[in-house]
Image (cartoon, rainbow, N blue to C red; front, side, top):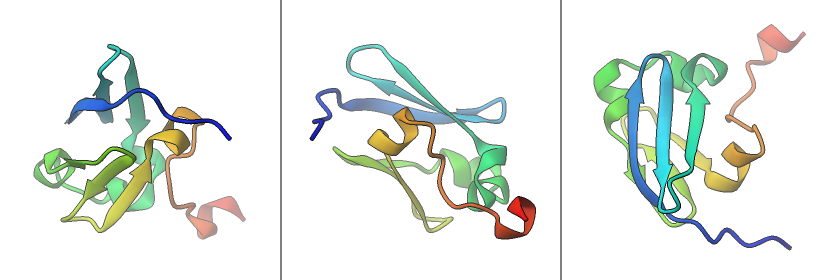
Length: 84
C-alpha cells in the first residue's frame, strides 16, 4: 500500500483547471471539463474548495476527489452518456 506523504497547501480555479499546490511545490491539475459536476460549476463555486489531508471537497457542487486519485489521473465521475 502506498502512503501519501505530501499535503495540500492551497487550491484554486483558473483557466479551466483546478490547481492544487502541495507542500512539496508539486502542482496537481484537474481539467474541469473532465468531471461532469465540476463542468457545471461557476467560477465562484469552483473556487469554494475545502482541503483535507486526503482530498478536495466542493460543498456547493457536492463533489469530492482524493489526492491519490487525482495523481493517478482519476478526475471523478464518469459521464455514462459520453462513454457509450
